Each structure stands twice: as structure tokens, then as C-alpha cells.
Amino acid sequence: MGHGHDHDHAHGDVHGDEHDHGHARGGHHHHEHAHGGHPDHGSHPDHGSHPDHGHAHGDEHAHGGHHHHHAHGDEHAHGGHHHHHAHGDEHDHGHAHGGHHHHGHDHPRAPLLEEGAGAGKVLFFDAFSGIAGDMTIAALLDLGVPLLVIERAVAALPLDGFHLHRGHAHRSGIVATSFDVHVEAPQPERTYGSIDAMLAAAPLDPPVAALARRIFRRLGEAEAAVHRIRLEDVHFHEVGAVDAIVDIVGSAAAIVHIGAEVVGSPLPMGRGFVKARHGILPLPPPAAVACLRGVPTYGVELDAELVTPTGAAIIATLATRFERWPTFAPDRIGFGAGQRELPDRPNLLRVVLGTRTGGEESVGSASHVLVEANVDDLTGEVAGHAIEALFAAGALDAWAVPITMKKGRPALTIAALAAAPQADAVATALLRETTSIGLRKIPVARTERPRRITTVQTAYGAIRVKISEGPFGPPQIKPEFDDCAAAARTHGVPVREVVSAALSAAKG
Image 1 (cartoon, one colour):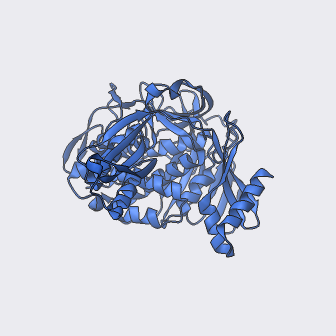
Image 2: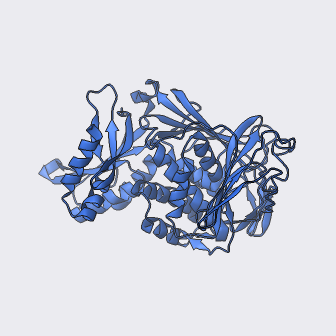
């Protein structure tokens, strides 16, 4: 049975501070809190916050009717279990459906990251206390990704009956951002097949939809392998499906917004057991381990779930490589808070956006792999299908090249470029979808021009433009073709006219 969970929350919304409630049309509320001098704020023995502030959630989770304790207490999908979250800090309440509640606070924040601000840079996930879906979004918000990026992506989905909470938590003196999904109405069970179809049909930006589908596929395949069922039949039960969908789509939207290469640290794995519906299961959860094939992990002496299945699927899909600390110059830092205090470490996920210093781009680093095979009995239709399958498996690029093999036989080289962690999945797809009985894996490193994405205004509307710079001659300016094509259809003009207008606006 697939993963899912319910959240049982005891919402007090007793902040102990004055609220100015400004009501706008549609039920939006803006709550301003002045926490600075409250004598009890930040004094809770477990959570570093006011004991009555907003949410008093326990740390106990029930997986499919069973109970266990989580270090993060978030989006796990273990057969329909209940999560009681231990927060206790200030929150921005963003409602994806039915209104927004923004609770503003006086914690200073860094300027927001513009779209494409991480192009050509490294985004390092320093998971010294593990990783979960809510911690991922919280850390990226803390880094500077606008909350609106998450809200817009989630609002594009045909889901309702929940709202989003952003807040702050204190961990070992560090003020971090927290994030949570609060469910307000009953939710249906959802299968992997229905969720994937929903993501494919939703009006999400194509890169966000593609990345979210890749993450969900990894999670679904892990569940299918554990339960020995078909991928399409994996069930995400009730609230657990909403949590996982929001965490995965929100993370994908944030990563696409930043535009940096993701590097992950090795992951700490806690131990212990959990009483599940079908018996005693080990920690880390079987689905989390299945998601982490090829990802370096290490054990810690802590009876807690540090890496959740959703967190595992996110980092395993995003990261191009894993190392203790990359060679780069940090520019910005964000902290995402887990839901519990841990006895031996701050329950935080740290993300660091930094500038490459050149050391990690040597050929020996092999951050990417070229996967290729020569085939002489493949039809054009099958070759096209194989290339689509390579992209679906995580290839960054894929192509076919006509060649001549022994005995003068015309043939094709089917090739794909993949980030190192995705190389095995891409290789599997190549062998599965072609007639080849073998393939080559060639470690490669690549040099990228620093890129940024800006939006220009034209007579045909707003068009995104990618600008590639660096010490490589004049900048390369390229309008996003999908934007241009959509504008051309809307205005009934040739697409080249929209491209020309966008180029003129970018250069002007």
C-alpha cells in the first residue's frame, strides 16, 4: 500500500499578541504580530517559541492506524497515517484555495531571489539532520524564494480543502523558516497514476511539471518496489497525498525558479522500528531507502526518522552529485526547520547558494555521464519513442545520430546526457526501449555559461528571455520559445515576429 498520512492539529491561534485583521475580498486576512518583546515568545522548552502560539501539535504519527515518532513529523506517506506536528512559532498562512492568511512578523529577511538568480551557480543541500518535504520548501523560502512561487504552483492544481503555513522556528539559537500544509476538509485517496495525470494536465510551467513528475515517479517506483505492485496502482492515502503533492510541486517550482545546479550532502540515517498495519517495519522507511539507490548515506546513533520518503525522492532526483561540501563560494544561506527537537543536533536543513570557484568542474569530478548505444535494427518510430523515454527517465538531453557500422550497415547512435545520480535510470531506459544488448557510460564534466532569466515586455505580452554571460564573449540572448509560440497563437502573428520583439526589448 502506498504512503499517505493525516494531520491531526490542535489549532489554538492564541498568539498572545495583538492582531490587526484586515479583510479583503475572498476571505483574505492579514495578521500582523509584534513578537519582539513578548516575555514568553521564544521560551518554549521544546520548540523555542510561545507555547500557545498558533499550533500545539504533538510529535506522534500514526501510519495506517499505528503510531510512531518522527524527527521531522511531516509529509510521510506510510499507508494513511496521522501526523501531530510540534511547531510553536510564527506563521504566514497562505491558502491555496479559499483565501490567504499572511501573518507578518518582524524577523528581518534577505531580499527575495529573482527568477534565474542561481543560473551558473551551485545550490548545496547540507542535510546534516536529514531531509523532508516540508523542510525542503522551508529552507528554499528562507533562502529567498518568494512564497508566491510556491502558492502559484500549488494553485494551478485541482486541489482544495487545505492551506499553507509559513512560520519561523528556533533551533539551537538559529532562526529558521518552517512550512506546513494544514488540511481542512476530507481528501480522497489518490493513485500514482491519477496524480501523474493531474500534474501532466495542470497549467504548470513545463519545467516545473516535468520535474515534479520525475520526483513523484521516483517516489511511486519506490513504493511499487516495496509493495510488489504496479506503479499505477500505488495509493497515496487521503491527506498524505495532499502533503506529498504540495511538497513535491512546491519544491520543483522553487528549484526551477532558482535555476542552479543542485548538489547534496551524504544523508544521515536514523534507526529504530515502527509498528505498521502489517507488522513491525524498520527505520529508515523501506520506501525512503528504495528512493536513495545510488545516494551516499551513513548511520547515526539516533532512533528517529531523519530522511522521509518524500525528502528522499526530492533530493535523489534533484542532485547531480553528492559530497560532504562542494568547492564553491557561498552567497546566500537558508535554514528549513523540522518539527521536533533532536537530542544531538539542530533539526534543520541548510541550503547554500554559491558561486563556482572552478575546482569542482575538472573532468575528474564526473558530475555527468554520457550514455549511448549503437543500434542497426531500430525504426524511426521506435527511435523517437526511445528518446522520449530517456527524457522521462531524467536525461538532460537526448539525441540520435546516423552512423555506418560494420559491413556497411546504416545505424543510429542513441545517446543521452544525464546527471551522475540519474545515469543508471537513463541507462535502464535506453536498454528497455531499444534493441541494443549493451551500452557505453562515459563520465564527463561540463562548463556552463552563467545564465539568468529575465522577463521583458513586448507588444505581444511578457516574454521570458534567457541571457548567458561570463568571460566567453558577448552575451547570448535567447527568448523562451514556448512563451513566444503562445504569444504568437494568441495574437495571430508569426512566431518570428514575437521572437524579434523579445530580442529588441532585451537588448534595449
